[in-house]
Image 1 (cartoon, rainbow, N blue to C red):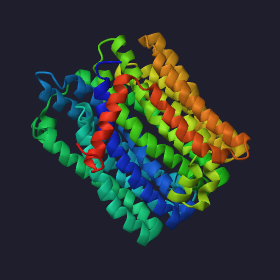
Image 2: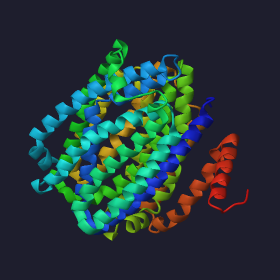
Image 3: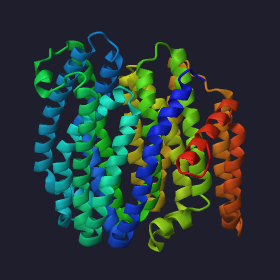
Image 4: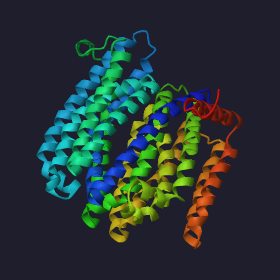
Length: 501
């Protein structure tokens, strides 16, 4: 255990709590969407969210990670204000150029992209929403990067809760009264609200403290080291970031072309549940972990931090697997509708892929944070190429089973690739406790899948087996971890009035 383990748990819990609110709000939204929009409407809504996020990720070309790294490394420096201003100036100039270039290219190719992503030009308005949302997402990256760099998880959590509550208030009426058009419009308003909330918080916490203004930023001196690092990260983003977009577009395009956009909508409960979960676990965990890895002084510290990250991630995954697998049909029926029950057969295997995806994400944070961006880029290229290959061959052969395999094969293989790399180059040694815990998670999930597949009453039996497996995971907690969990549970109960102080 590293000395920062308790801080990792504390800060992950803070952001995780906000993500739980997002999780619940997301369930409410998808339930209404499933009832009002059907599989086709959910498919379009899913593609729009995917498109806007991926375009944003590509346009920033991974420079956001470089900005976080630069600010985190210099936050305690005597000249921190000037260094932060210089880092922001380099970032804004570079990203503004990328954004203008992206908007021009996207506008020229707008009809082709619409046909490829949505399958029909009648959804061109959805593409336009993704296009006008792009500047909002780019601007939002600045206050968010500052909060990450200063490890201000409380600010991030506060912003997320405010954003999700406001977004829920406006999106539900839009979907209810205007159906798909309302759902499409809600995406733009969600991004706008996110920008406003994050900007106001960052202004209060950092812009006033460090006297950061647009005028001061552009008066700041450009530091060659910062520019070079941003260009290095942008090179990674230009090559791998573009390939991420291409890979996802190609994979989704294969599904839409072969099975129709309704297949994307039908499979959405599985993707949505895994994304909602990993959406609060992975960012909550890696946001603090990344900044800590940036400040790590040697391989020993890196190894301890990665072990802490893997351990916390695995404990977070245990409830997901041991409860979602047995109760998947009930969950889908309650939060979507009976029209989506067919995809329950894919969920257990997809969630095994999620396990390796989360583990692989934790190990991957050690690459860019320690300057190994070239190797990370090479591995990501192979990962994405494998995604395309699996989707192309398997979707054509096995339909949605092939789409399921796309979410399993690459994470399993590249978790092991990253593990071997980290062992050889960062002296990573997985602790015995972590290996036992990770094995228990995979073994327990395998038991649930086999019972369901090979026994007539397996589904009923798993209603009992899943909670029992979850209960026995308590024995894998170390003494101080049990005490920490008990203390936090008591505090939560006290806050909601179910326990006395």
